[in-house]
Image (cartoon, rainbow, N blue to C red; front, side, top):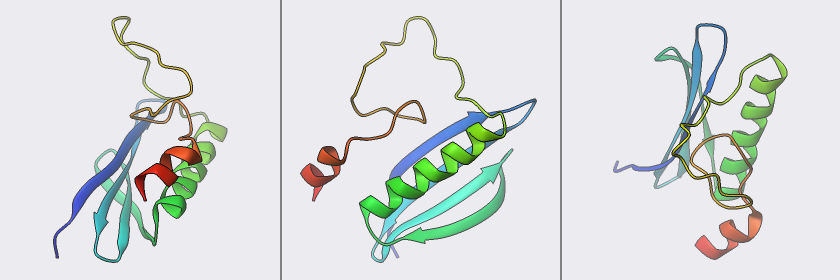
Length: 100
C-alpha cells in the first residue's frame, strides 16, 4: 500500500516531546502519536475533517498537561489565520473544503 505524508507536528514538555504524524493511504489517514520516537498510539481517520479534529484534540490534551509548541526562530514569519506547519493554530475548515 502506498502512503503519502499529510500532517506532522511536535509539542515539547519537560525534557520530552510528542510527535503527531499522519500519512494518507487508500483507506483515509493513518495516524501515529510518538513520545521521544517511541510509538504511543496509532489510529485511523477516514477523511480530512476527522484528521484535523483528532489532531486538534491531541494538541489540546497535550497543552492541558503542560506541553507547548517549540518556540519559533526569530527569522520565522508569523502568519495569522492561515495554514501552519505545527500546532500553533487550527486550520480553517474552508481550507479543507478547498482540498476536496
